[in-house]
Image (cartoon, rainbow, N blue to C red; front, top):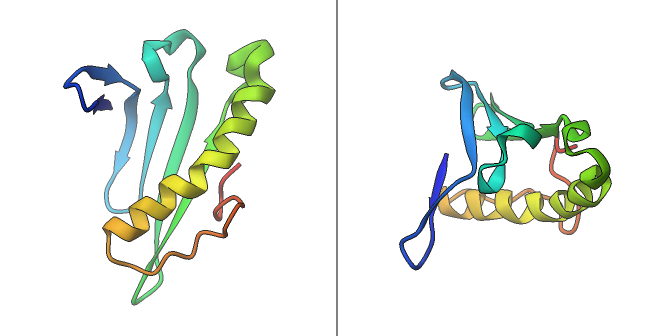
Length: 106
């Protein structure tokens, strides 16, 4: 999983470990290429008939050692915004709670 920033630089953020379309994916999450301290993100897509519930679980925080609590706190504040952007880009109503974690986020 790569990001290309506005200057055109490429940054490796993660490695796709599980790909089960259309139901789920699991990513070894290591922003800035730090795979020795990777956490894991699982994203599940649950069919709700006329809509899809997106569940995100961010786990394995213990891999970050002494930085785990600080990093987890930062991500808990960030994932709702990321999911809101995803919902907006999909043209669907945003049901991510304002200022709170989305369903399944931990």
